[in-house]
Length: 47
Image (cartoon, rainbow, N blue to C red; front, side, top):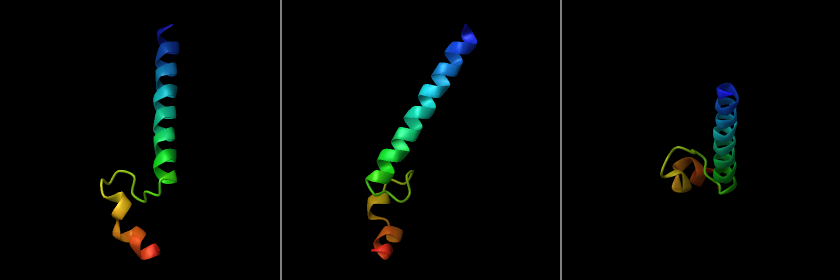
């Protein structure tokens, strides 16, 4: 029973991480972990 709970928690955490990455990329962030990713030099050079 404990194994099932751990597996469910891991699946939920992985799903939350994937959804965060998806939303961040959809907003146009290039470097997800960087707090300045909206105004990054890389992004400005690409435009």
